[in-house]
Length: 495
RNA sequence: GGCGGCGUAGCCAAAUGGCUAAGGCAGGAGUCUGCAAAACUCCCAUCAGCGGUUCGAUUCCGCUCGCCGCCUCCA
Image 1 (cartoon, rainbow, N blue to C red):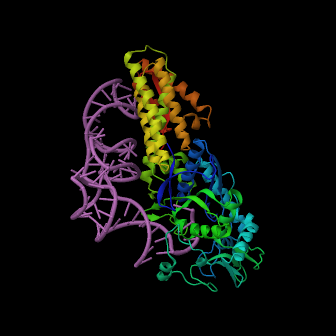
Image 2: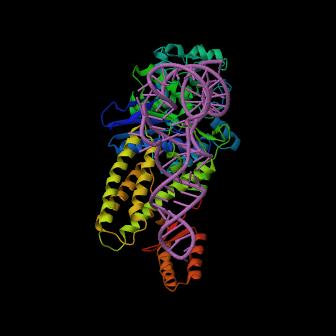
Image 3: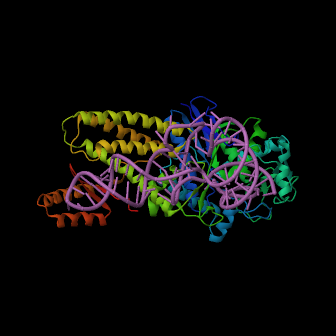
């Protein structure tokens, strides 16, 4: 089995071979922190978190860098455009760095809640201005960039491969007439590496060989990625909306400065839509991660993300998230059924129980293979998830309604349960009851006590009282289930 | 206008040049149960349309229709 990754550069799935065997240098474009993280961010960062987790699961040593863009991009291409962070900060009468701090915290809070592993390095753009200046200077020295009225522009025509990622030709873009020639630009497609601050009212500005100013948007990723990961990265991820111009420009700057290939595999994440339209900060049609976690729970959102392929666009609807919640509940119940089975008194081993156990063990192995094959095929999480459901069904078949356990059954169920937990873990999910019971150490014992009392009522066939307890608990989002081995409780999904 | 992608059952969502087109949700029938819940069993699609290539296409090619993204900040 080999991992294959769809590379935007070639538009094909390619076998993944890192530059240095066993090690993966990976960079993902981080957020611009001037507003709350939304579901689009959730999809991107959960998807790449799954990538990191899977690579590590395969035994690769991953160094994962994801930047924080805390220096504003211009709101438009014209030289007079405002810096978004500066603009928002001015509106709120706070310093830009205050604003940026607020939303950086929000960002990590959201990704932590979604159980995304922290990047190994989270470099901030403002902390890497010297590296950017060095890089820009190299480009000027090499003749790939030129200075014009205190601005430094990248000369797009100096790079033969410009457009190789987004498959665009310069002439076509010019023909569109939508890219206006900026003041002092040689070519309409030239992009800013450094912008003069004079006359822009920018609060965030730095000294440079070209005067006071601030960096262009694209240069930060090149500078930070190469600082920590070297001239050639194994993997670079981003949302599809960054292919052009951002990623294209990263390639141009980096390769012209180093004369080395910048990225071996480019991965791009599909867009989150809302009502058939892209969810984005600028459109204002976004739902924040915090808000949606409040409605559905973080794990359900995460499951919603991995239920479709990372490259597919997905529509964000309440219904689809609710479906994800119900589906996740099925996995939770299966794990709980396994645990319950393992706690049952030992009973006789019959031919039937023996063959059922053997079948479960067999299925566990083949479903594990299905999961890995899915993941190996460009991180096909929907296939991987279907393997998880397979494991749930197989487990339920022997564990859901049994009144006692058998030694063979226990071995098989233990194996299936462990497999389920392990593979869920690769997707960053944990459905074991302990994961949410831990927050309250008294509720569990109290519920157990209540069910014991209820069992006595049931002995006397006092159905009204017994049902009243069950209904009452349901109102508290605790689901009681009567089974051959006694009643059990679980928390409902609440949705 | 240019570039790219998508269109699979009521909904979500995979795979595949030929054997039963995964899985989940919803729905239907049954088993179990005092009832309920859960679980289990069974049922529920000819793959947007039209042409072409092929012994054979949902899968490859072309066209049409519809939708989305990028070409401006965006994950």
